[in-house]
Length: 313
Image (cartoon, rainbow, N blue to C red; front, top):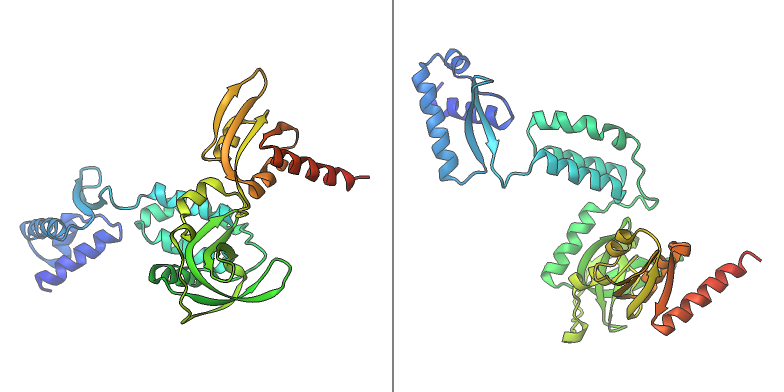
């Protein structure tokens, strides 16, 4: 066996998480320890020259060499975190969830995989996806490409009450919120940015229609993230409410929120938000909340609460 094969064997072995022991390699390839040491030196030079995210280190405990990732290499802790968040989202059908987790695990060395797998085993076994059961991975990628290419698309879309409509849209962002992926897209017919749940898009194809927008109609996904809840936009308002619950939960729900006054058993919070999604969250807080401004929104809350009460008569 020539030197190139020997060095490739050592590199492949290191990449798969094995420890390269000099004595074992000299025996396997019938060469001197000096030859194997030269292989290690050339491997170090190769890693440095190609700017690979690994370094070759010697472990006295293991009596051999290992490849260790640099800071830019994803860690086992990061992989575990991503898998946990992914499972909690319930966003993918079972087949795609397992496929994605397998792909994430493959980014780590075998020893790390063996540590992670028992931690996620039970949660993966009991995984329950959402009801729609639509494959999303390829669709998510395709719409991301449409966004990059500024490509209009004609979609056949199933609305909330199963009505089927055809729309030609200009996709602008893909956002994940409350279990679902949404395509935020400019609709020229309504001259506004609308939300389309990705799993409800039954068919799509590129369109030759030219869709133009003015500056005011352009979409800012960073701002939307701070103002919207449950992907329900409505009107932008400056909301003020008394809150008796866990303050941190309210501040986390509204990224622009601030406490404007403290009282003995409650705080007053002010935030800029969209009214419809905010109302859904506020109603979920029961007696822990009282809206005090703006006046129109207070009236809307009272009307909704009266309609809720009427259902119990």
